Length: 218
Image (cartoon, rainbow, N blue to C red; front, side, top):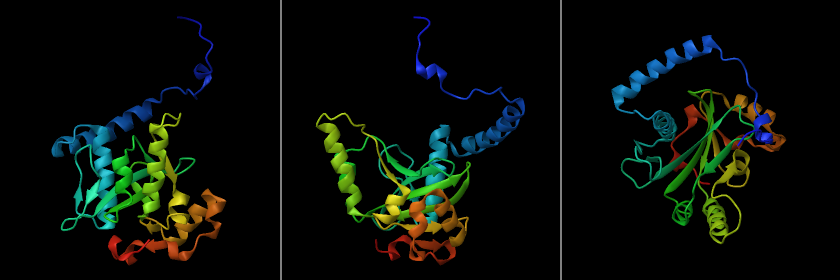
């Protein structure tokens, strides 16, 4: 089949391949490869996800990271307390916690007080700026309604997402400032969306003041 007139062929912004970018990027990836080989983390996507999950879990006081595909991302050492980690790029138009292929079982888990959710905002590959964390059974209810809607034959995707602002304003999540101060994060949020103009100081926690995830009620 030739000469298809599809709009998809007109999309994109194609630029000349930059040889300097290739060379310097390859040098960085070679260093990444050394770490992957040292720790036996050969799948690159899995390596990045596990590394980021470990960083977020560590800041929130979790001891274990899940190295398998199924289950939640982190767990506390001596308690049945779990963490699901979602990531968003600082440069994205919106920051969202995205749930792929959600099941009824997983939606029920988000109603349980044993499970926390975190949405981390990263600048570039390794700079964790801040994250929203908390728990609310209404998240489970939201996911359950979407799964049931999908299973009933309605034409919706089995992927759901919750914006950063919804986590904070509707589900009462706290914002942990990691590599930015409270004022810097507040400015970033207000520049991102006018909805954050009304955000209260009580929503923010400086990393040095953080006492562990279990010390907060949501």
